Image (cartoon, rainbow, N blue to C red; front, side, top):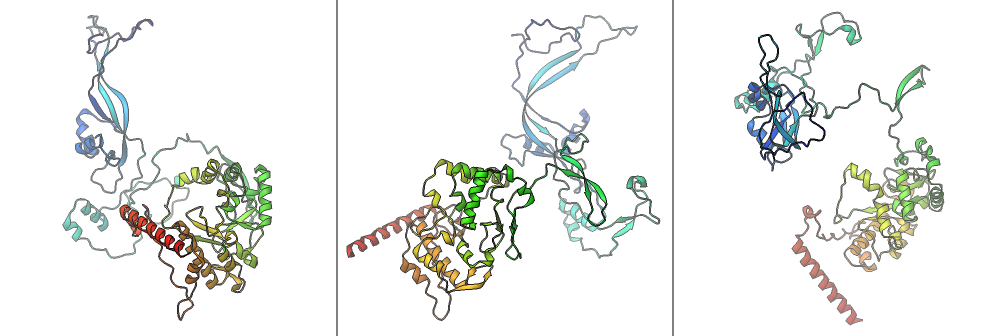
Amino acid sequence: MNPPGPIAGPSTLQAPLDDIAPERPLPSAHFYSVEYPGYVKPTSIPLAVERLGGQSRVENAFKRASSKTESLLELSLRPGNPFAHPVHGDVVSTSNILLKVVKRKRKRGADGAAATDGTVGDYTVEALGMIPKTARFRSMVDYQYQPDMDDPIAKLRSAMDTMDVDGILRYRIPEEKEDYYVPEDPAAMDIDPQLLGADEPAGPKMNSNLRLFTPPLFSRQAIPQNYNYKSNPASVVTTVVDEETGEEKKRLINRMRWKGYGPISISFSDAGVPDKPSAAVDEQRANADQKILKRLQELFQERPIWTRAAIFNQFMPFEVREILNSKVILPLVSYVFQDGPWRDTQIRLGYDPRQDKEARFYQRLYFRNSNHPIVRPSVVSKRQEGRTELAQNRTEAVNQDDRRSHVFDGVTVTKETAAFQLCDIIDPMLKEMIEDEEDLRDVCNERDGWYSTHAFERIKTVLRHKFFSLLGGHIATREECEVLLVPQEGTNKLPPRPTQRLRFGKHNMAKGALPPEDAAAHRLMATLQQKAKDGRFHEQS
């Protein structure tokens, strides 16, 4: 290995191709670099460091254990001005090498020609160490706005930044003078009227005086767009006709704009119901799977209203995946309500459940399970995973129980959230209450549908008790439910339902859930009590 140190080489001669490049040792010293967005002279280095927040701020940004917030640098181009937005920089990992380059100047002779004193080469290069981290300022500078610093609010802001107690105490809300326009400062920059696109108005120029102060940020756009001064390639010039004047105008239309392929959504208060899909969806009819589309049309003829879970249970996993991915198959045959008793269901196009009493069997009941883990995915994860999650789960394991997840029989439970249509409840006691025609409305109600409030509350009370009893490992008896249906003495109100026992779960600790060890002890005691009760029952029988 050749000895280390700076070695000069010829700058004009080329080495033979068969020569092997000499190896040099790489020093173990580490350096940190800052890509300062400005010209820095050796004498102005202290000023540049001051603009970055000081030496301590720069050192904290390059620390190995620094947090994400501490690793950010802010370059203040106008330090001391609280209204000047800084430039943000990020500390990133790099694998750079710091080189020391020395340029040697040749001496010239008396006649101005280069002296031939035996010196070979003009530059010397030496590796000083590695640069594992670099601070970069790649984001754009935010818009800048300078308010009147003599304004009382501007003085208050400056006093708060410097913790000037006297300045804060001197602040008083100024009297409203309603001088929203003031004459323009003659020293201000004049703008050519041709650039403004209008003739110069007569009289003194006026400026706005609304005293609006700068927000924390003007623009959320931090990365510049490299559009090369070209128009959007997806935009085409389209001629449109004004319906009122008949005048033709040319507009730029984005061909790649988002087209909504969701089902038509209406409110319960809307007069009519849609009888055909939207134009954007209907255009995609030929691209939909015709076999699945025909099967869906047959299902909606058998039953005009379905939940999505009930529909998916009628198909194979690969068909469910096709329905989710295509996005237009369901909107081709159904619409949805935003509110009311049929909310979150798919309804056959042209069918109005508000005009048909038989539609009461398709009303939907939903109970939120506070013990069920609440997962709130981001918008991105919803788009990427939420729509295919059901199909993927069904691909892994499909059996007869999975296909009955939308049915409630009062004995088995297939999920931890209660969302059922009344026609899918086959529990004998609940079915009797649902099919009872004695307490129905003549006009459909937005909250209770075709049932009276009393009848619908009775159904919800029993379903809630049976469902949460199954979650707790207990099958509710008819006697238990009948006790809940006895009105309070002197009123028509049902007794308050028993408070649901909180089970251990991370999400409900703020609601008064028990600690893990206490919850385990309570579960053990409940199990022992249940076994003792079952033993006494067998002895009596």
